Amino acid sequence: MANKFRILSIDGGGLRGIIPILVLQELERRMGGKRIHEMFDMVAGTSTGGLIACSISLSDDGKTPKYDLSEVLSVYTVRGKEIFPQKSWLGKIINIFTALKRPEFSATGLDKVLRDTLDHKRIMNCLLPLFITSYDIMNNEAILFTTSDAASDPSLNAELYDICRATSAGPTYLPGYEFNYGERKRIFVDGGVFMNNPCVGATVEAIKFGGAASPTQAHQLDDVCVLSLGTGHYTAELASKKMASGGELDWAKPISDVMMQGVNATFAYEAQKILEPGQFLRITLNIAEEKYSDMADSSDATRDYLIQETKNQILNNSVLMKQLDDFIKTAQL
Image (cartoon, rainbow, N blue to C red; front, top):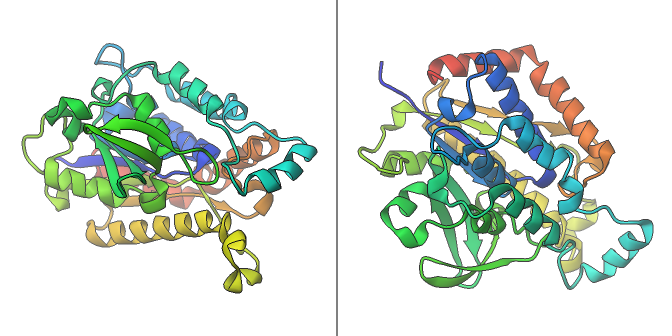
């Protein structure tokens, strides 16, 4: 039996990153405590998925991860309020007007959390090859931060802090992020504008470049296995019926959800079609109540809802857990 090339792919979704982390904790439990970096050969992420990818792969000694999953989870459950501070009722009213001209949140909290977590480590300081997305609006091009590129060109061995700021600069939520990459000045926004679900992009990276820091041989598509973790989607109407004939102000906020959900479903569909049966597993969450759907909501109520629904819909779902066990066997985790 050929060795499998195992890819972990994590969607964007702000503080809803709690969902994939809980799934990964369950995976480690089912594997008897085996760590994530020991199960996969590459980890891909967009936005919050990119932050998780960097956090679970970062190593100080090149042998063991710097953080365990409980520490990564605490960034969301404890420090989420630093990244997306809650607003008073007056602040919410003021925000209705100020958000027309500037992002809803400053990057101050995110900057502090990322620097505390990632220090000045670079992509080559990670145990797993990375594939992280962003978009450069200055030069109008998609940017993929990959370990294979960093290994072949030292100028692309970017700091994880810069990569995470670039991939998570969600339009309307956070300001774009400027830094020089590949010897060019760039202004980055969230990779979710074109690839919120990076599972297919990571698959292409594996079969084209091998995905490793020192590529030796590209992998055959038949040998690739992908665990794709979503951050939940709101299952009711994305917007009111007036959106069908709405203008710029009507569409400004809902368009992000429309793009994310459409892209997530499209790439999941494509991955399912191009990979062999059993070699692709998609796990995500249905968010039934709109009040819990905002990816920047750092309230205790939304945090608790996401945790409880992840347990109800995923971790306590015997059918889905059987699929996860089957994937474990097929992917040779």
